[in-house]
Amino acid sequence: MPQKIIGFPVGSSQGVVRFRPVSIKPGNSVNQSFKVRMANMDATIEGFDRQIREETMCRVNPKFYHRIYASIPLTEADVTIFYDELLDGSFNDFAHWQQIPQWQSTGPTVFHAGNSPSFSSVTVEQWNRFIEPPFALANSSVNFDLIPPALICQGDSTTIMAPEGYLWYEFQVNGQMEQAGIQNVFITNTLQDGDSIWVMASDSNCTVYGNTLAIMVIPQPQIIAEVDTVVVPGATVQLGATGGTDYSWTPVDGLDCTNCDNPIANPQVTTTYVVSAFDELGCFGRDSVLIIVDELVDPETVLLVPNAITPNGDGINEFWNIRNLDLYPENEVVIVNRWGDEVFSSKPYMNDWGGTYNQKNLPSGTYYFVLKLHPDLKPLNGPLTILR
Image 1 (tube, rainbow, N blue to C red):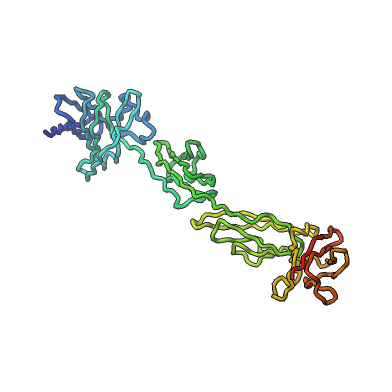
Image 2 (image 1 turned 90 degrees about the horizontal axis):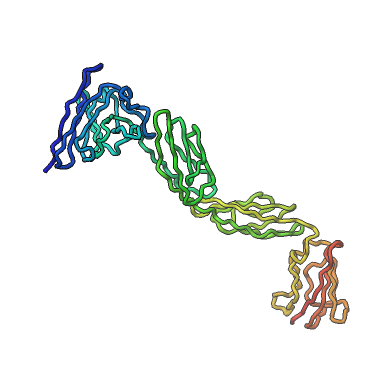
């Protein structure tokens, strides 16, 4: 059957007249008795120092406290202390003096607000430790929730903010102290996926803790530019990048487009092109490619010299066309047959030889060319086949 609620209409006329009753609801049918005394004074005066309290307890009521005795000290009971919020102040916790010694919270409480002269109350349910009799109304810190950023890209600057109004803050990442001081804002760009952030704030009265914030970090996109390249002055080179969706190239000099993934570059001097890009999640990455402009670059890395032509009238591969030869305006070409007889020469060569000698078609076969590009460069040579 339901247990009876026992009321204790305690009060005191010592000093300020106060009537602050207590009710107790035993938790079982075991015969037991309770006694309650209201001490209408600061508990510190009677040896229960209010300044000795757990760190999350901000304040113990300085005006009065209660001593509650139970004949069976370890039995359960619901205990309620009534108070006048207008005269006594507001409370959100129930403090109990422990043998440590210090005041400690009894744990979760039930608060009921009343309008003066009606009483407000704080209740601790199923309390089972009446070995030490002092109980008091108290205020304990209310933990706060850290709000995670909506999206963190790797390398981004991220701001974690704790509530204002405290004198000291400590920010920890993965259990390691990262920042301690008066600032309630922690800014970092080194967070990794799976990191946890924990915050403690304190003032002269108490300490408050934030929830542990689990961090999700989006990996930085792998933006990959083409390999570094060496070109001669005036040469064009196809740049390219992968890994993103929106691209931006700098510097803009010598580029035919700056917001595409594969611009054509025509740098006049050695240039490092930087490509920046965002991926579909809005995360940012970058890479760079070095284009070296050098008059004495190995021609074989610049020129494309065909080793055969097919001048048969179909319009395809009719002429010996050396790509990028215009980069060497001082070039000279000599072509000989297998016996070393010269069949063609030109200075400069205009990509216009179609396998003729004295305006007559040469027979199919293998010929040999010597290509001079610059006085300081070694000539190129090799076979050239005519296929009719």
